Length: 201
Image (cartoon, rainbow, N blue to C red; front, side, top):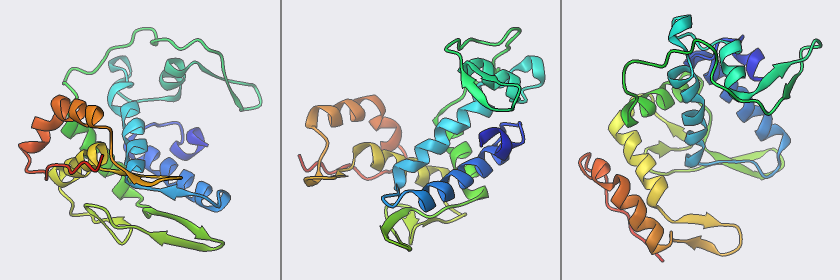
């Protein structure tokens, strides 16, 4: 599905189409489908392909050959793919020259999401989908005008906010885990004016 959706070019536009198709497939096939704010991290994973896996020896265009080599994926004669457990860096690979930072990643996530936006929420009954509100997400949508700083604060909230559990309602992150997150990345977000997390643990 990914190769077809991207037409073999793993750029932001192609990966945006792929993520859009996967959202609709999952929403239709999974009665318990839920796409919450953490779903943005799926876009973050995908953003690594054009930003970090593209080779300078191919003008930094992330093509099928380069990407499949990284993941140990091989194509059968009938067009299907199989995993050969031989992930490797492609021959003559030249990595990017410019450092890739948190704001670069957020910009890629937002660009990919906003090109083909999908709703945040979940299936609640047959044929019924309810949207959610969370931080910069209103009525299940991130508006096109959201700033990188607002998106960074949303990610910070995801890292530090209480998350719903399937059996016990809402539980806060363990204090030790929260302190680890804050000591590792807290200053970055504090400088942006992100609100301090409230821990219910």
